[in-house]
Length: 522
Ligand code: GLC
Image 1 (cartoon, rainbow, N blue to C red):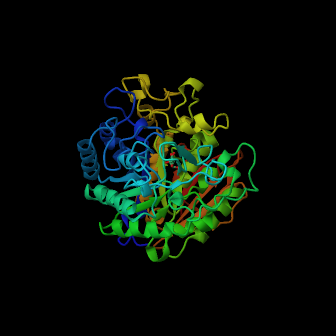
Image 2 (cartoon, rainbow, N blue to C red):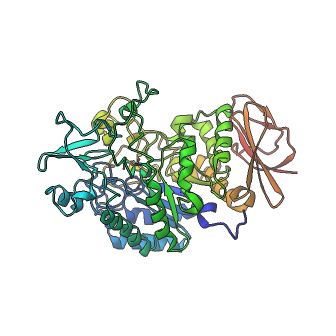
Image 3 (cartoon, helix red, strand yellow):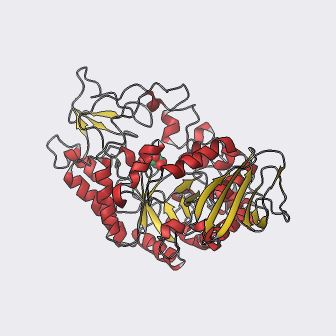
């Protein structure tokens, strides 16, 4: 892949900001846009090319912004449209692109559209949402289940029908089969594109179109206790309906009218179906998120086939991407432990494809235990005790060892957690051995070396305790070797050391326990 011909989002490192938790500027304990603006220099220093902001729109915050009450506004908690414009301008001045979260599947039940729709069965916007008569027993119209527990239907006494919600009952699903709704949602994209936004992360995209006949979902034979209750059913008729690809193609056409903008999709599906979201002939998403590392076993034996299967499944011309953490998952440093988390950073930033870094993972932030009376996440409140709550991985960014980690001067909306003296930006920026220093060196190296940015990928046979692959561009061969074991491991390749996860490493004949390296092959 030629650097001159590549799109910006192919060589970019994307950084996810959860705005509530990044930087508070007014002491209310919740992060905001002015706070993000203040920290852009940090992101530029780290080498980030694009920020994706989780929702910042007006919202009752039942699902912390994923319940949108106005798709073209800014919640006062985060600031104003003027703050947003200032943030985009300041990001662009630093060469940083801005990607917004677009939530097509549902709105808030407080959205004026839904308020109007629920007024009567004949309301003009009634059909902008999905309404059904009660089933024969007066209960829900079919067996569909909400991702957040319970049925995905709620009865509306005022009009005597049920409305559909794939998530919370405060998040009624929009009806993309209605042309007026579709046009209104497409105008939302244009609104933000006209304001200079560089792309969108499309939320829960596989949910957007449902079965026209509202057929019951079949039982899931693979359900096991401990899984979220909606897994009781296979989501045959509620996700990944064929018509979703028409919706995406229309969104893509709009975005393409604005030059080089990007569509990234949150799509949770098995690999072959995920690949369908690249679309036929480039009419789909540029980057359907690849979440495979979030659930992977961190052994060479499980990662090797996982990477090979992903690479092999990519349609012709499709560009890969990798995700190591996000606001819906436990922190990578908690999933893997501190030493493997360093290896994971090296893997994320050397694999072929656009990496997305979740805020705070570059510090090695871990999950923070949330006392029961401080739980915020509705998922944990609805389905308690299964460890599904997402608050532990959404805690405030740690800027310094000051009280409240320099995140706020007030009371933070989620606790800061322990180990603050060592795990914060200020301390780690001064320590060449820190996780932050590793991320920064990896990002810089990825940019300097065309083989890492856009080069080809080829897995290699190595010691079974290790994972190894080559990246190549214009005759330049780099080797990435990661030792997942607690033992040392010989390096049977001659080459020059470009980077090691061990900051003290000088000579490279042997890999230490949980050490990863990048070599230039002789
Ligand atoms: C997506 C978001 C998640 C949200 C859900 C409902 O999965 O990532 O945070 O709760 O959609 O909008």
